Image 1 (cartoon, helix red, strand yellow):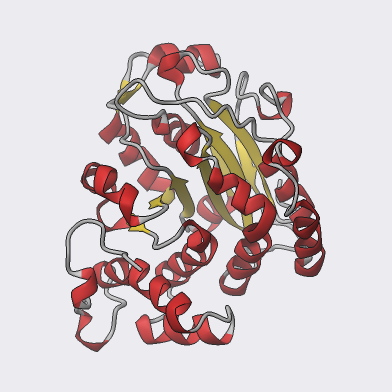
Image 2: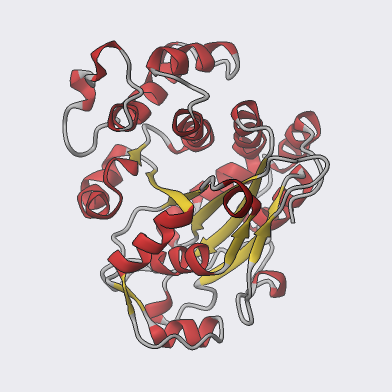
Length: 320
């Protein structure tokens, strides 16, 4: 998958039509969409094409439980065109996949939903708005984020990695702890695949990191206080606390730009935010704070590689 191009103006217009609609009119699925049903899943593919000869797979996973529903709603109504536009400014051959996770341990109806890698804005819209917002969750120690990692690690095929040895990007947006393992029983029930035994979470993360740069995005500092520590044990400085959920798209684009070396340091990030993304003042500074610790960790902070005092705190480090 991954054919077609993104039309920013058309995408903005389509989102504007949805902006005043209630959530139920935008996300009309009341059951799992058959096209996103993971049963029988083999692979989701990100492939080169004449339009995108240097494709880069970008997986974006949404937590569709009750406490996180504003994220897909905000994307669909307001920020998805800007997320895609921002991403294309640093990676023009990006192919974006939307998927969703819930809580398989509580018997939720649609705990794993898988889209396709796409380059067309219309098809990205299709998969995002096809998500069944169950709005469940709760009642246990976390959500089934492990299922998203499992799909990315074992059920994706990307030309960026297979042809060029270039890792894709895995963004998981959530506000709960992860669970301890990928459950053999859940994989059989949801996908139909037999795995020999449960997979410890650290093992599936190790597999994920072989082909992806994984990031866990926390929507705001209030939620970070509950979950950032446990996620840092898995992802280290690839745990990013946003100042506000609306920054999800631009922060993701900047993280890719830093990792790929398109953005050499924080001064380059600042210039990019101002010139290409139209972010100035507080909007610019809160994005800089969100990505600064990561830039330091990969040697791209510049000016002595030291984070500001705002970012020196170990948890909840992206307060506006």
